[in-house]
Length: 115
Length: 111
Image 1 (tube, chains in turn cyan, yellow):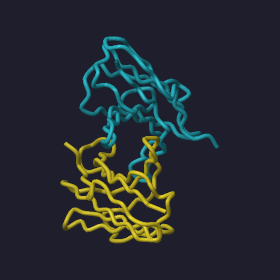
Image 2 (cartoon, helix red, strand yellow):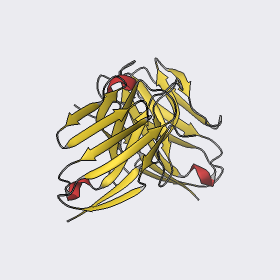
Image 3 (cartoon, chains in turn red, yellow):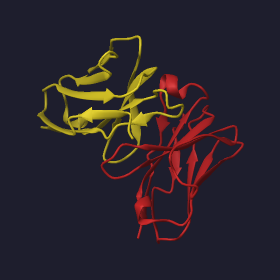
Image 4 (cartoon, rainbow over the protein chains, first blue to last red):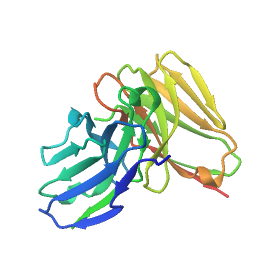
């Protein structure tokens, strides 16, 4: 039973560029949440996708956008990258309505470095 | 602002000792969860405690919740070097969104 898969594992981008991160949820899960974790900090909620729509959003600018596909996989897009976007980006999956009750399954993350 | 705040920020103990980490939060919650993170990788769900529960056990883990004080503690008994990691508490609260994580406690278990 595959867990949450994220790609790529590491990425280096130049300031101003755009980046796309990908996530495949755990088998059987239909909801995907994205988190940003700066070095030494706790994860910060970016947004959540369910039924191919953004359902909830944290305090992140519109430069951060996402998408969910019919197979429940998801992408996180960040435009006009800033140095401050350097972080570990975590994807978490759950079954709708169950994440807040039973917890989430996290992927290993994508380490994004903006230079 | 973060809902949960862990204390201490860092903790160093010897193998075999017990480790206690605390979490304080600000608003009412439905449940509180503890996660572990090894070396900046993905988070692993450890245990969930509901607002109407006061204590919960899972193997060497013991979690308590005091809703009157808006605080929780995670106790790891008979620690092992493999327990070295960062530990985060996460609360749902009334923010109407996903879990809100604290900054974490970095635990080092020395052999």
